[in-house]
Image 1: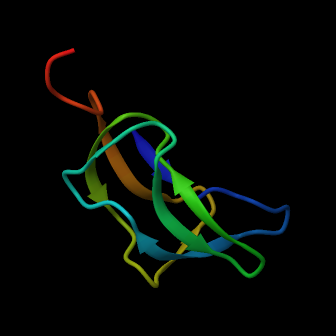
Image 2 (image 1 turned 45 degrees about the vertical axis):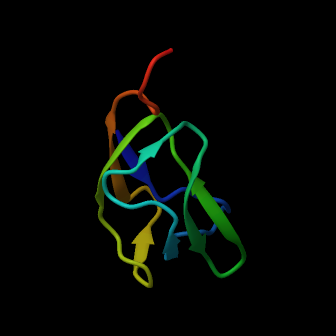
Image 3 (image 1 turned 120 degrees about the horizontal axis):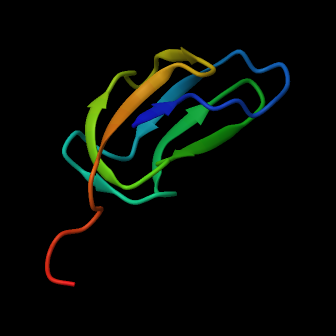
Length: 84
């Protein structure tokens, strides 16, 4: 599943990816903060849209991304392993 740059304001066109909290291969759960993004008006965490494993981080810290641009990919799968 794709993780895209969200839009927080009516005039927001792009934002800067400030920091990744996850790495490729990490397991995430839905709603888990993945990255901190900075715009001209706000600093916000981008959350995982679903559970799985981080497959790709497509935007490096310090780079800008347009609203709707894919910034990461998560492969679908359980967020935790082991006996239930």
